[in-house]
Length: 323
Image 1 (cartoon, rainbow, N blue to C red):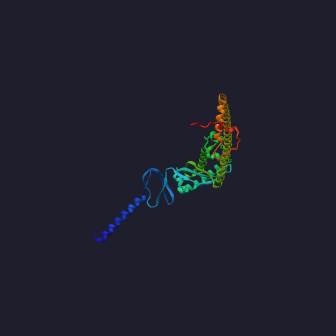
Image 2 (image 1 turned 90 degrees about the vertical axis):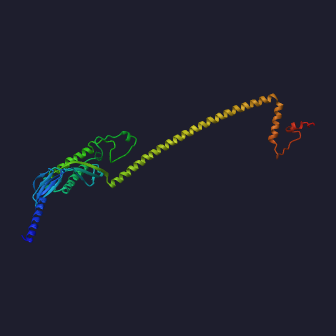
């Protein structure tokens, strides 16, 4: 065999081997434990659902594999502005959990997860809007087991027109979400999916209503603060009055006691002076006259007296000192 023929045979063998390998690769596929698959030929499902994990085969090149998740999937809707039964506009943010239970029906109805999300948006949003608009705000916010705490509300005198602070919910959020789940499940029975759970993730007033509620809450708190200040000012005035009255009473008692003490002291001093004067009147007169000399006559004092005045009678009677 000539070299050119040998080269042609080798190249042909390699081409056959490559084609055979490509055919095997195109025909073989694996399914993960978290997956389920359907073989599709020219857009139409062929055979049943493949849910067993492992290696599987299909017609090469003309068939393809559509894979679907077995696990729980998440749906998160966009927040919607919905009026409650009492006409309070609130923003409702909802989430749900779902899974594919019939891949064949799922493929025929919505084809993929993006299509399923779109249908869930329509169904769940519609049910949530219908249920919320027919429910009072306190029923949406609170659980059925909630009971008002009298110790918190007592004495507050808070006026709320949007929520009754003392009312016990008849239904509560748990029952509301169960009703949403039941009604939403009815709308997706033909999609091949199971809606496992629906929850209200977040509630809030819309911006316009929230600002009004905040203003009303601020005004209410200011009113309560003014009430406390008024009560405090009244109590302060009462305490000041009691303090001033007690002070006046104490001062009055002190002054009366001081006057009584002075009176007793003056009486005692008068008695002592009287006793002393009675024992030696001449000496007492002499002593008092000397005191008047000391207190009444200073360096710049000028006295104009008669020569026979009694003021200097003791000085006139003093004899010159003999040496």
